[in-house]
Image 1 (cartoon, rainbow, N blue to C red):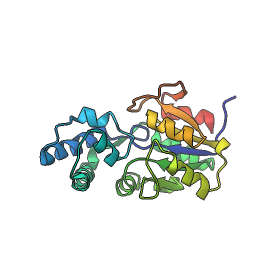
Image 2: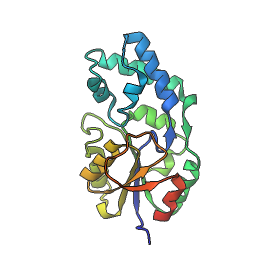
Image 3: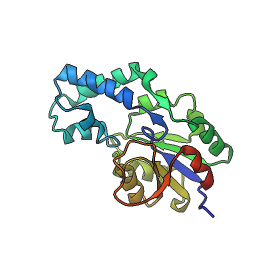
Image 4: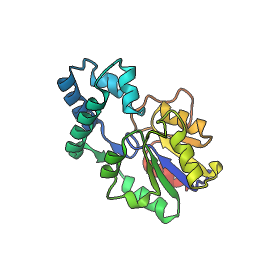
Amino acid sequence: MAKKYKTIMFDLDGVLIDSKKNMREAWHACQQKFNIENSFEEYFSYIGRPFFEILSILNIKKDFETIKVLYDQTSILSMNLINFYPNVDRILKKCHSKKINLFVVTSKDKKRTNLILKDISHLFLYLSSPDENLRGKPYPDQINSILKNYSLNTNDCLYIGDTEVDQLAAKSANIDFMLAEWGYGPKPSIEHTKLFQIRDLLDFI
């Protein structure tokens, strides 16, 4: 019999939403404005980490704040390029009806996260983004903050992500992890329980 969870935390990009086209549009705008030579594929290979951290990894040394402003503005103007994966709405509502504690733990900023999830935000107890007090993944700060603020038992908690940074964050927070096989990657180097479609989650609630 599969283990049952009382709390489920979700990554956003590559797990609940397919936002790759939106990201490409935003990155291309930044390339043109700031003469960035790094391709979208280079940028996208680090998805899951905080934006400023990705810029540092790509050896972009200046204009961090203004690059992010343009990226976010373009992303917001291109929200029509974001789609929820099949059955996300139905499965989240099913979890909510069974009194599962639902959270989003994402590296996306709070403004865009709220805009994307506005129609289903009532299903979640909290939408967590990095801030000055909470480092983004792979650090466990966001997950640990939720665990503490909602007095949750780590044995009952599951984090669903699609990249190695998601797995590392869950491991550091001492909660279970499952891999969303439909997501972006790069995949964790060690094996984990895999979800091949989001409705597979029904086996664990």
